[in-house]
Length: 131
Image (cartoon, rainbow, N blue to C red; front, side, top):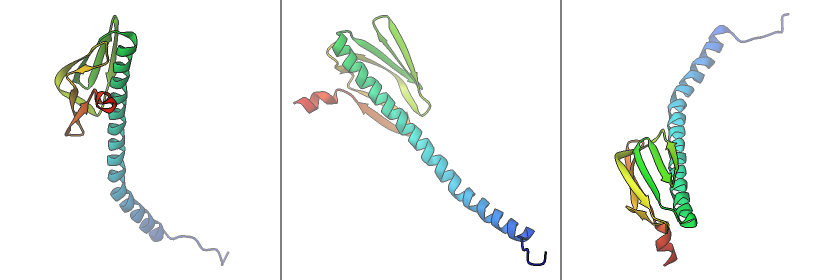
């Protein structure tokens, strides 16, 4: 076949080199974005969990005790004990929190470390919204 034409080995190697270069530039950015998205997801899970526990304390009239230590949040409601593990969030130092049966947390915030930076989860925000 005289009219058939394919790619030469050199052309294929040039295309693969360009593809590898682009992947080497874009890959670390994609991994960084994925880590940030996971950290933000964990933050939202923590926020939703603590808010839900405050509502539950109010609805059931039972106080809740929470303990954040390392990469875990533990809580007790009556005899029920639960643990929520994290990968991106760390409680440094270990912290105790109590939500009374009216749904008010003491202390009113949790200090965390997320992706190497300090963050603070403010609680009892619903008190300010209602006034």
